[in-house]
Amino acid sequence: MTEHSEADNNCPPEQPALDVAESWGFPLEELYKIAIKFFKDNESKAFHPSYNDRNHLMALVLHVKHGAFLESKAHPLGSFDIIGRDRRQAWSDLKSLCKEEAMSKFIVLLDKLCSTFKPFVEAHKREKDDKERKRVLEEENLKRIEQQRIEEEMRLKNASKKEELKKLAIQQELNRQTYQQFAAYAQQQYPSNVEQQEILIKQLQEQHYQQYIQQMLQHQLKNQNRTAVNNFSGPESPLLNNQGDGLPSYQSTEKPETTNSVSHENFVSHDKTEGEEEEEATEDEECSDEETGPIASAQMWTRKDIKVFKETIRKDSSDGIIKVGHGEIVTVRVPTHPDGTCIFWEFATDSFDIGFGLLFEWTKNPGSQVSVHISESEDEDEDEEDEDAVEKSSETGNDVERGRVDDKAAGDEASSPCSVIIPIYRRDCHEEVYAGSHTYPGKGIYLLKFDNSYSLWRSKTLYYRVYYTR
Image 1 (cartoon, rainbow, N blue to C red):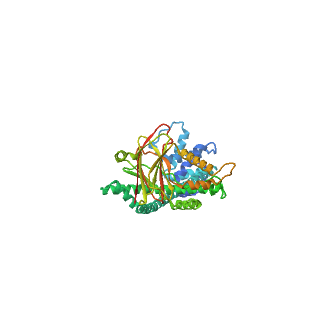
Image 2: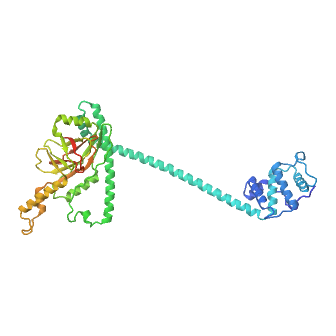
Image 3: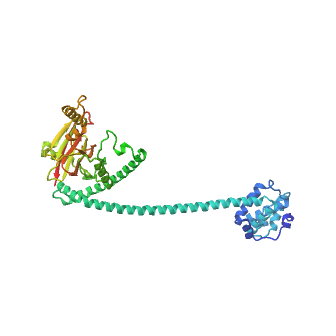
């Protein structure tokens, strides 16, 4: 039997296995794995154990792996295998040592034999603590992010509920304000069908609400742009104060949104927000030389029964059919009726679109005759006005030798102020019937502009109808 190792002979009383693990800061099995890795990587490099110490370490490893030594299960050794016999003797001397105690003995012995083992374990401990700290921080971050996500979802959900309630209140108020007008229009379209009237009213009210929301967003964007321009130009800018030479004052108008069709009609509202009404009131005060009153926004919608509409116009009279030549603009002048309060219009074309816009000419004597004027373009009207002004200036002696007269005063006497209600834009009226209405702002003449000046080759056949309601 071989002798015990020198370190084993001089070692202090054994420590319990759990105490050894706690003193190193690792679970016993994990600490044993670290020790085995260190022993394999550094034997004969970082330290050189004696023959007996190495046999004792290997015996502990075998005891942990296979348990107590059993001669009956051991393979026979060769006659000259002295190292094998010594290792088996060291293993046999461990007898019935438990696995945990064998691990603890291996760790304690390795620490005694190699001074660099403890720093190696401490480095592993720091690395483990860093990983654990990072893991905890990551878990906390994930919990915080999840909590923020839940709070944001709740906030959005509450904001959505508030927005829905706000939209519902706005929609109910708009429906209350427009119900009588829509009901009158629906009764004209379906005189004896109450169910269809209700369906049409609901469709018009829904489209009216959608367009109102769009105009509110447009107004907010317009205010933002105006603020940006004010910051850039400064308060003394002639473009903002409208005091520059040759800068006339125009009434503020908004480009209408293009809307999608619904099953029967698609209604487009042009109701003004409070900000727009205040803006127009300010512009009216600046334009005090023009005797104009406040103008409500027009309302426009579309219908799908274009074939029925054209056939109705053909049967009623030929006055509702106009051929608009290429490059031409047709102006239908409709005076306000003494017994009327609102004007309605409907129009459609064959095969191709056409431009449409609505203006109002303020005059105290609008007359009662509806007339149609055809011009090559808007420039033609301006040229005619210029020619009239030249002739008038010649009659009044406005030449170089005789001196000038006040052109502005002469122009004010000859022309009436005109307000743009709907700017001229191209409409797909060859696909559906375009219709609209506008409440009388006062006495004057409505100018329905049908613009084909952009077409160089195509003429358009226009079907239209204009009427008023009391």
